[in-house]
Length: 68
Image 1 (cartoon, rainbow, N blue to C red):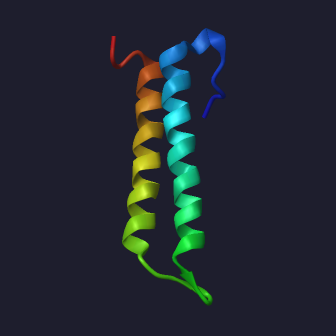
Image 2 (cartoon, rainbow, N blue to C red; image 1 turned 90 degrees about the horizontal axis):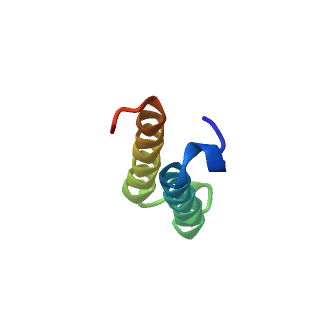
Image 3 (cartoon, rainbow, N blue to C red; image 1 turned 120 degrees about the horizontal axis):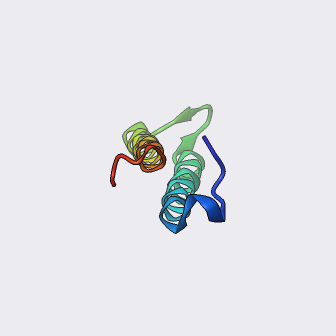
């Protein structure tokens, strides 16, 4: 993963912002659904994790020129 910078373009930085926002929501969901040592509603945390991974794939494809 490369850090966003001005030479990667605003689209890459925007995708990274979406990815990090989703990751923050995932962390908050883990804390919100924690009951003792277990996490309830793992369906929500798993979907947020998959959404974050999808954003990462979009970022990699963008850098490779896939969308040009």
